[in-house]
Image: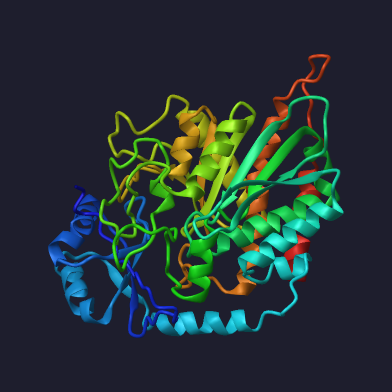
Length: 449
């Protein structure tokens, strides 16, 4: 089923780091619907699997695929014969990986919870957890940790609650990151947001009126495997029954239209959905927590990369009659507000679009499931970059820029909940949030970086 969805699986049992010598990143830009069809059929026509590491959501938007040396000529000939615009973006992906490894090797042995480090380093998972522990220990009045689950390999999956105690039930803004292991900028952005929400006084008023819950790393096993062994590892690390293939695509494993479209039943595929919904403990952790607090959660944001997109449901189908929820106008309006807030910091442009439009739908995704249980504002944010060749290998010096503008966008959604919260006298509480002050703070952080 859905033979046009093909991905290259870099499955490996070796403890050595994978070698991408000679692999190239090829960028394609479909100019019309015919080009979209050609790209959908590409894997079946060529007879081997392809990994579109950046998905195509609309005509005119680029997509990136990684191509092994032995498949390069055949791939380029196919694209050129179909007159699909293309270019080689990265000539040797191994060089990019080596540069990234060198940067990781320059990280200090001691990781402190300070904005300079959090905004400039991709931290190991255990250091992320250490920092969370220290933050909560130093700020017990407005933070607490909740362990929502345990990964396949026994790592804790933790959520940090940020907000001042109140005698009323506050709306929750839920943010998670790291569902896909190779998307390192997502956990880095989440960690940056945590530190600044807790330590910057400009957010005090907001935190008196809403709670922000952040799970900075949903898939810690995959994240560590990507860091230490196989840079492009995407999935979890559960055993699938296949001798050489591990893991499930956690963003195809949520219990909404599970296994229907844009998935694979082959365990070696990068989009393997698993044997059943919630087969992965990482997914169960998020599902159980969202169910527990669903009556309070006003917004769900899941951070991914890359492409600079704000995606709204539904993503499980490309059928135009089923593609949009009844409140799609509200989703688009809020998405545009978040995009404008992001742009106000650095001028970075994010596109607001439907998850199921363009290249392919994907059923069993977390944002669709969150929307299905009544969380009104549910989005996937595909972080930077959009046009650069860095892709998942965004250098350390880009982290702070991406994180601070994303924080502004996320807070735009959070502020909307404050305006809808009623006080005991029935009047609307409005947080006195000075956008100019917040923008000035975020820009000054950028200059310091």
